[in-house]
Image 1 (tube, helix red, strand yellow):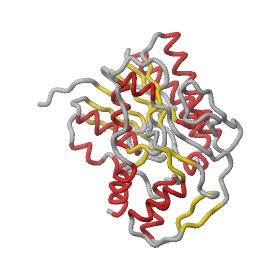
Image 2 (cartoon, rainbow, N blue to C red; image 1 turned 45 degrees about the horizontal axis):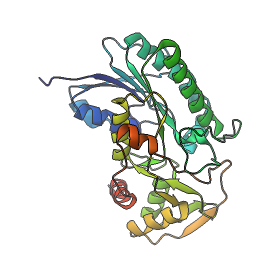
Image 3 (spheres, rainbow, N blue to C red; image 1 turned 180 degrees about the vertical axis):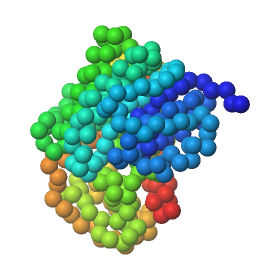
Length: 312
């Protein structure tokens, strides 16, 4: 029987990032307990994991009482709707999982003497007035706009995690995740990469908001998982940006995806959504110094893999 290392609980285990994390830690020889309520997660993302004796799964809402018997070495809180389409559809659950879900997950980690990791986001920087965004930047967020339910849920979650660290002297890690893409994203995710790929493969118009001059920095999923894994193993006690500092405009991204997909789709423009950030680029100096981490997968290589997944 395979000897297992740590026992790690992952909330949001059936989501895009959560499922890759479960796979990663199982591959390292850890025991993984996944939790998800399938609001946005999919069983297809974790089906293959049930073949591993080290994986177990609980269908549950983490905003309710959270009890897991036995030892836990780490609690990774990745449960939350994460795209503008999702948190527009589920504004109250988004706020609840950021507040109540974080509280329950922190409480479980405290009871078990486990490390706690919060999946935060570059959205805590809002529509930034500083580019690139360092961890010391406090952000430019509209708390009452349509994106506020996600932005403020994550900002509150960070505040709660730091309060537990200071008051209860818990081990806390906070990862601020910048735009990430790769296999297991949903076709109707609502974010640029799956939208553009789906439209390009169907031959329908590729919709770009505004003039397409707004920028994003896109990190491939394997690079993100590597950064998160290094952060779990580190002594970093304050938020750390994990993302790819290579900045690209949305129009450039649409053109690149159209070319790689061999598509003849036209690019059409639609009005910009409210509070859509105009720039997004991580300063990864802290990750480089503390974690010896930097992204390895190029945008084109990552897009080729993601397009192949969507084709399949």
